[in-house]
Image (cartoon, rainbow, N blue to C red):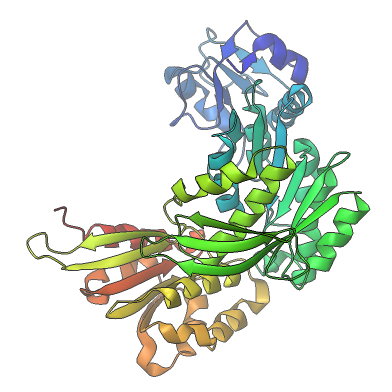
Length: 465
């Protein structure tokens, strides 16, 4: 049980048609679990239209701002003036009564991975609650906070943004003890004047820190100073991580392992530590150092957390390596698929190329790339300029999707150009032309440009042994 009707009424000031108890909370009648409170948010679709579906799926009650059409009149409703505001009020109520140590994470790249790493290592040290998926916006954060069980010891929340002014109110809602900024890049440049403005917005995560709060900052950024300035203005303790000699968690060396993992050596306030993470990439090592810093700052055991990192594996679409068997009657008739398709911006794409460059023993390295979105008027130029980066030399052939990625494609040397297509569907229909035995195939793109669809088509080539 996470909510009673009495608690929800106290939190929201709403009126309930009868008493109820909720075991969870859901905004989607299709995935709702029996006993959940259904939250009828209005976003792309109006949740009030699905209240009856939610009750049919086993919802214990529904949070609404009006009596829904076709309401049978027999199931409990919590009626409020605004469902969004009520959700935020429930989040505040839960945060106020919670004794959990709270971490909030943001960044242009790595925030979801860092959140998942924290979930993994902290769950071995105490009862841990973390946001589902990438629930990091104006409804995802309060929903995640309102779902937090009362006996939670560690809470981890991801805070994202698309436009100026979005992070501060969410940070103040969460009231973290530790705030992390993993990175600052050109993601969402369409809504900001420049990267400095993005850094200023990311730094607002420190605005919700309470007394004796800690700001954990990537110390290698051109915008590190902007982050530090905001953290200092909040009176926060500052912990930096990165390669820079002035940081508290300093990455000294990384080594890619035959198992697909990454060993990394780093200094913590001058003491050398060796750790390992079961994912390949320098960016994973940097995220892991931010995680260990946060664990230490909330009173967890960073040594135990460092050891537990080796058991963590990334989620689908975030750097997962999978072997695709093209013929189960022929040994070695395979190619490797590196699925990094969940999302993309210039910083994360370069990180992916670094991983590609580090991987050896393949006949070819093939990249399938779709548009990186939300880069504003500079989007075409940013795509074009990336083709000249020396790291691209390690890739044998590029196949590109979308009008923005056409700028990248046209800037490549002729011999590296594969197929360009307007849509992901066109590339998906030609995957058999793109891959060959012995290839390493890397797929990346913004979620909206549907690179993940290509991954699914590539996976269908697999013949189970």
